[in-house]
Length: 118
Image 1 (cartoon, rainbow, N blue to C red):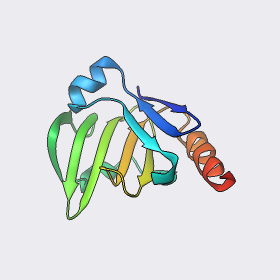
Image 2: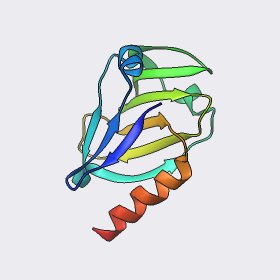
Image 3: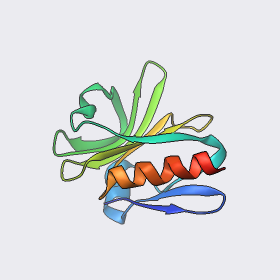
Image 4: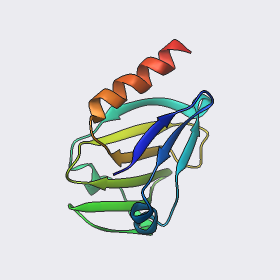
């Protein structure tokens, strides 16, 4: 399961070694200046992700990789065991990062509170 670290200059999404292999990617570092907010999603969000390239997955059980659709570029590492947390970005190589994490609602509140406090 991915984890989040809040640093003074960036929010870091850490992936396990297994998740890095499945997603064909690594940890995602998001400078606070590029972060626009966070929210939880419905568990069927994966139906509208678009084309996965690169990545692997077995929807609806596990979805991982980079997804592109009509100008949207999303990095995803999610399993159906968790509520999806979407981190919205601007000026980053991704428009959004979607991860499955424990207490997704709590993390969305913490991220949004931190952004409002800046």
